[in-house]
Image 1 (cartoon, rainbow, N blue to C red):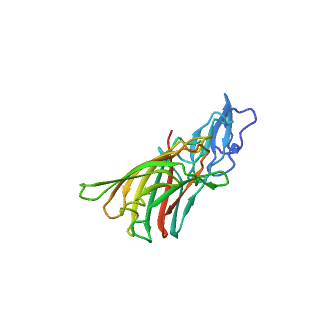
Image 2 (cartoon, rainbow, N blue to C red; image 1 turned 90 degrees about the vertical axis):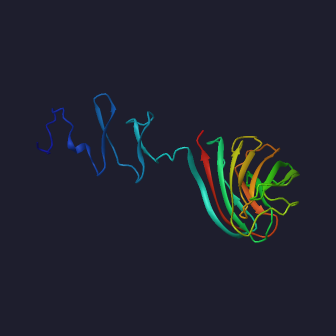
Image 3 (cartoon, rainbow, N blue to C red; image 1 turned 120 degrees about the vertical axis):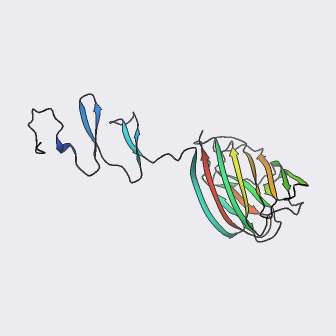
Length: 231
């Protein structure tokens, strides 16, 4: 079969409809062929009735977890993670790995909102439990009307942030939307085989868009990841 130009009256698809490598043959309506240009490297073909051809190239879905941001930090007195909470997700997963320059320091979390501004009002509440590897004794502590959430350790215990790596996985809800009071819950290890379980909230409702982590003394070194959870 010849690949040359067909006659004007021929109803076959003409090869000149294609302009470049990767072009796809599609349609905009019945008996109406059209060309869809190749997409960005790594993108996948996605159905979309709003497009003229009913198709588009889009970034591949990552499934139930969508990575929003991640970073390493070193010898910081505080680390701000801004513009991560939006109306796109109802829940978020946060992973924090850190070491402290001061043993048994308390790792704290504060909310961030417009500006961004750190929420420093005395309106954080929650319980915190810590248990040694023997599982014999749970140290019970908490925070009531404090200026931050204590997520590892407490100012009244010696089971806080260690100079070896601590790891914690947190979940957040009621953030990123207008006038909400955030809820957090978490679990992890302080790095000395101490198990940590806790939850916390702030009673001031705002459109919170991020958060801050810091030790109550010294500095922290480590990393964080924030993921949106599929609604």
